[in-house]
Length: 106
Image (cartoon, rainbow, N blue to C red; front, side, top):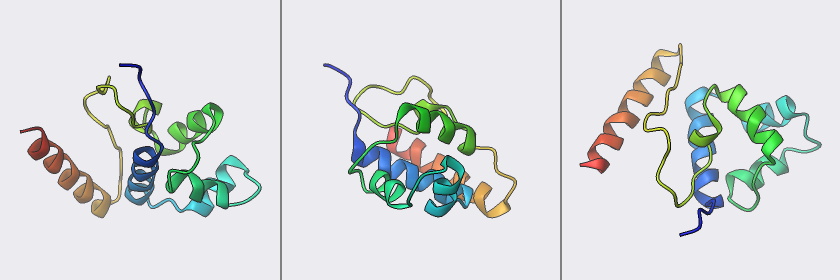
């Protein structure tokens, strides 16, 4: 099967990462110096995808590899999403996410 990117799932994943990091769509717009915040909302809604340049910059902003942002129909190349958060609430949220992932794998 030819690997395909799932725009909808990638948008959901972007939102999850942004929520875990406490980053808003406006923050992303300003970081990437985009003309309007609507571009970010289109990514989150799964209508459009960020360019590879923007994905590269987002991976730096989120401190995760690009493969941990993009979702598609291939098996993940990296098994663990490594999130470094100094916020206690974010850490708890990520620990909960890890437990859910283990339950889904079982």
